[in-house]
Image (cartoon, rainbow, N blue to C red; front, side):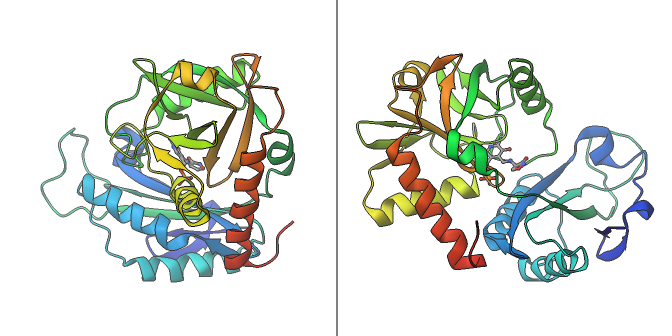
Length: 285
Ligand code: DCS
């Protein structure tokens, strides 16, 4: 039986219940994070929890825990559930009160839950790459908030699933923004590019790590939007996320990216990224 964290208490999964007037349930009024666990240790936990705090600040949800307090609670949750490789998911909603669109005026405590899930590294996708399709980005213009409102993302991912693809690459006015649950990158003539961190994308923690790696290793990286045409014309394409790390994209809309093989620069970035994980969490396969 697994344990979940609910408002600071460890309780059995079966006992965790949400009220029908919880604002997360009714409005998607809340925020979330997903942190990777390798060898029982969280990878970039601080960065994720700082982004959680930032998201909460943007929509005025008061989180009564510090980053350190959250880290301690999540470590204990991982320990209790004996997670070796996996994820920890957490969300804060604005809490439970009579249904009304506007924020409650009286003190309503946010609802906090966290749980774990075992998950191995996606080794086959990392080695062979995945397919993607392009879809119009129909989401709102505050994609920088890691909000529970994921309907646009869910609809985009469903289109990918129906096309037997792993991811949907979203575009706004012919500019590529991001994947349905990942950031999108292209490489052309050795230059690595991804959309700038503004309100049209989520500034991925994996994305930030990759930018840092590129700068440290002297690889040319530009945080600058690119077009669908640039995407089609790229030498290499890849996606990044907490669960997918650096996953090559070898076909877009059923057309191979360049030769259709996993690119050399992508492989180099995968190696550097793996080294980061090992430095933090110990040896991984
Ligand atoms: N963009 C979107 C829309 C995402 O949902 C995610 C991650 C990313 C980018 C990449 O961000 P990270 O590098 O910080 O993971 N989505 C999480 C999710 O919903 N499941 O796993 C990761």
